[in-house]
Image (cartoon, rainbow, N blue to C red):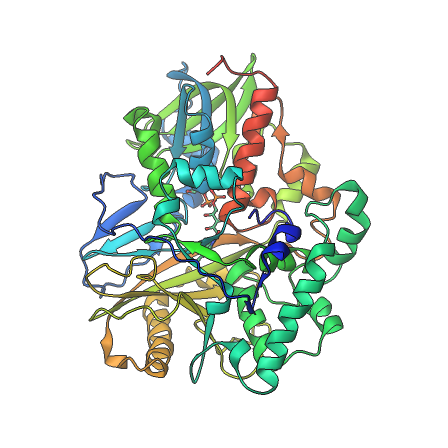
Length: 548
Ligand SMILES: Cc1cc2nc3c(=O)[nH]c(=O)nc-3n(C[C@H](O)[C@H](O)[C@H](O)COP(=O)(O)OP(=O)(O)OC[C@H]3O[C@@H](n4cnc5c(N)ncnc54)[C@H](O)[C@@H]3O)c2cc1C
């Protein structure tokens, strides 16, 4: 199911709902875990040696872009100026090798394409690591179950990913509240409220508008987008505090925003898209970027270049001209018939400075992105996964954090990384999610003392969580933390119904096409898929390339 749209009718037809639903047997064969991997320097999936006792973060590689883009002219001058000649020409140049960039490249695989990625690895925040046979994600953990026969389903099949996926039905969802529980099966008010939430969705789903809205539904969709998720929930409530607590943590974990910040339209879009359950791969969504990367490499090693950073882009003489710094530190000029900008807008606005009209630049400059820390907790022994994604409840709805009011919830939820590979041997890894649902938190991530502090907080919280699951807290053998500074674009109320949304997608000039999750302010694989598809369609419609 596509998270960009409210495809409620089909979800409803299946009858499975968020905090519960009809019992479906989502039994699928799980592929053997230890597929042989072709590791190379730019691979989105790497083997790590461990033990996890260092003080280095993984995740964003922000130093180089910060240093260069903030002082671009000085930097170029220091390198001897712009090269005078064009070093290379391609049909399509894709800037950014995250999920959207790799999906774009896959669309253009029959053309003369080139993908450049500034970081040392492809994948963006959809990357994975493998420690002694245990694969885990540094970020995204799951996708929604695609509609039968949909383009998404065909894509997973084409990449042999469908057979490797393990699905979890919503009625299997567990929370950790003293012990592992299924909220809808709880006696008393908590269970009643969870079931009422489920019933509400069943009544609501057939009547919810599309997103972005079809013209006939715009009024309805705009009305929903004018509300925060919290005000929408309050109007439908009251809800038991445990249900509200889970929804608050869900909002933090999915959007890096609190219920009182996120658009009700966006929030319901996500909730609805998961009504049928979710689908996970061993190693999380890095399994998707890994497969894309490997398929694209078959088209020629030289077509995927890690450590290669684009510095500026302009259109000239019927081409796009790009200045980049290659992995060896040399400046090069490359010419392309079309360019797909798959880097996020907070970077793209620097790269497209020469082409971006001022009002559009102003829209991009103001977009809010939220930060994230993800800790992979290595356990000493193998533990069977009792469930997939587990929310950590404490019995009260945590208030939205702000500066001066820190949250007492280091971990919103955690996943058993071995859930999609139950037969895998080796240690079990738990991936614990700590979103920062407030503006400006990324500055806190630059604090040089941060590692030990974050690690101590993750450890203390996860020890308690383990204890509640009957796992000795002394089982923790090591913790590896990834930081993501601007990872989640946040759709505040009014944004998805505003004219500004149109500024995030489409084209800049005649030959630059935008494809990133932030086209829809929607942090999901499905948004990347849709963005890559739309930009590819636009390039094809404009007939900018030789027939592929
Ligand atoms: C902790 C976390 C958990 C998540 N969980 C889920 C989940 O369970 N399910 C889900 O569907 N989604 C999830 N998401 C969201 C999902 O990961 C994103 O939607 C997706 O990875 C975004 O991909 P992207 O290609 O749009 O952007 P990015 O991943 O940001 O990729 C952009 C790429 O462009 C590169 N780049 C930037 N500047 C330049 C330049 N000048 N030159 C060359 N390259 C450049 C960057 O280095 C980066 O690799 C999660 C996100 C996070 C952070």
